[in-house]
Length: 342
Ligand code: TYM
Image (cartoon, rainbow, N blue to C red; front, side):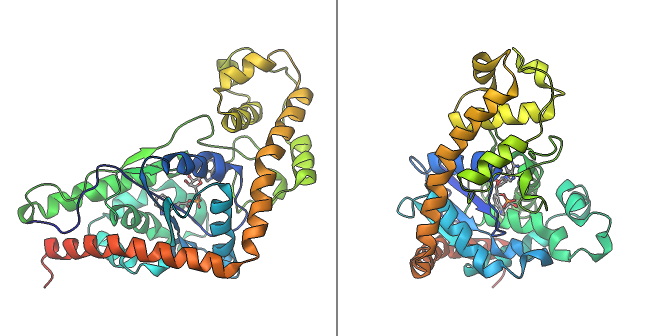
């Protein structure tokens, strides 16, 4: 069978939920990589508003959050001239392909997903089916564009593995209708010291948008005062900064602050230790605060400026959606032919 959608040599896809409170975990774990990839690759970034429906707590602010998150990624350096930026619900093929993959993926695969277990918690019977199904929609997002690479934080690794399983399974189920595999398996890009940034209050918990205490994270909207207060209060331990990375393994909070510094400065954690070993955390925290202020405040100022013109944000999303749709329609049309729909 010949296809109208071509498999690109390199195409990047990633997504972010419009759930407010974007933080430095999102920035260092994902958005920073998105920015560098747009220099030499075809890049598609989605504000995944359909995913946000999976939790009731997101509904009230959904509309506002789409503007905010779009503004945040543009303010961070995603350029609408270089990257396709669009909101997921405006390309209906995401939902359409999700249904196809519902019929490819196995219950057992979804039952292993740790993020569902964490998010549903003890009230699993009350969790929406959408929350359970969440990783399948994510697979549809990626494979709808026949993406080859997906830059994400470490918490999305298992979802990426599931995406690869779904792609393999689809290729296998429909092998008699195909000359070659239709989907190439997308590679995750999960790299650097900041792939998993932890809470400032508890180094064993991931930094998260939904954590109740604002002191657990540095938001991209934080001003100088907030950053100073939050880093001052950030948990550390009484020991000095060590010489070697291996000495940080059970010092979770210390390790996290070193990783944040390394991520912001594009250094390895060892390079940061070389600079600070033997010192206490007071000096280190002062420097970290200054670096954070230097990186975050231009983003938050820029974001506030962009949010003053919501029509412009809508224009960017509409333009991105048109471009995304051009790719998605062709791929979905091929998928329907492969399945045998008339
Ligand atoms: P979301 O909105 O939770 O997070 C957006 C990106 O930020 C990364 N991230 C982190 N990285 C390091 N440390 C942290 N503490 C941290 N917290 C979040 C996430 O790994 C992510 O890359 N399921 C996705 C959205 C999505 C998607 C996709 C991603 C939907 N479809 C297709 C890639 C491809 C999510 O909830 O991201």
